[in-house]
Length: 241
Length: 224
Image (cartoon, rainbow over all chains, first blue to last red; front, top):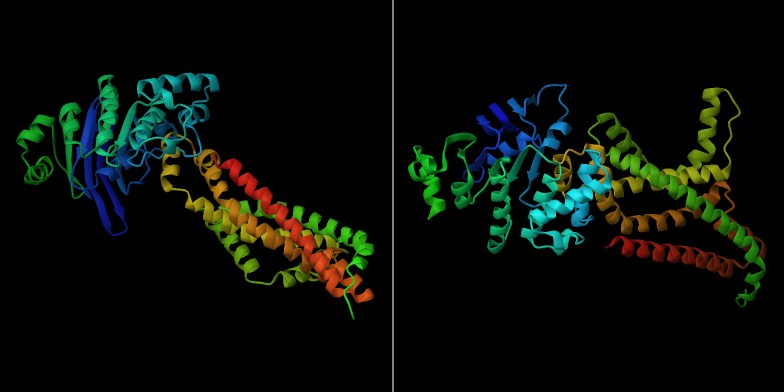
């Protein structure tokens, strides 16, 4: 589903990704962990070209992002993204947030978009807030709406960029529940996260990134209980205390 | 002059009314066109296209850096001469048309900066969220960025509209028969400058107050 080969990203002189290779299969849930500044968010943002890579190859669902015939908007329509800061549209109600892209990009009717939006709100437990504005919601509620908004495009892949890092601790659970449900349904997911419990429980595979490289990868148990790389062990020691 | 003669102003109200008509006419069309120019060049200032960015910057800097009075003289006196010699025709420009062009060009430059500032003040995450959903750049601008930016533009736009309305008073130098032009004619014939100019000032005040109230109303309506 996702193929990444020798991905490099530089900001001027600063090289944030120094040759990342990854391969993610359909229905696989991959959690990316690592210290801040390790390049994990940049890696994720390169996958839907919110960051332009410096070099390397990215193939999403059979489409090479360097191919001139590939329209990046078509690729993005298949790749949902959930942000740390939610990024809901503040001037639109919850329902309107969810309905916009399917109507404008998928060209479905308003009635159809509304039906889909209500179904998704039901799924993320936010039906009661359909007509509220984002600022009337808690962070956790906003993030669940943001997930519904991304799902409304019926994407094949979902990217999560530290989806619970901006939330108050008591609101994290609700968002993780929604993500677990998605994982159970077979969504292909790449999750940059600091939630080690979630990674351990839900991920099929964990990537540990540091200093612009993937230092180690493997099944959650292998990483969390028996990490081979020194840096991985140091990091896990610090966060799992 | 021994005393003020306020009652005497009444007989000149029809003539001042004519001036008011031209002041409003030029303000409405000048600022209306100015807003379109401002939106275009304001977005031009954010454009990645170097040519559009360059043109927008040159336009804004020239207009902001020169007095309105001189701009009026350029458009009314100098521009027709240039066009005439370039095209070998008898091109002329009416003072009313010239007046509208001056206000449009002038307010356009300031509005462009207002537009640029407001659009850039919208959180970068909004553009990313729109693009990540598959909306293209234009759609994201239209449905997500612009509505949020527009709301933030209203207070500075109100400010600029008021400045532009008062700037129309400078157009008397290119013989536009607006309020100040009429006032000056009356005052120089009847030696009642204080009464007439005070009345003229009240006219401006009424227009700008009405505008302020209207904008405040719109702002509240958008503040859902």
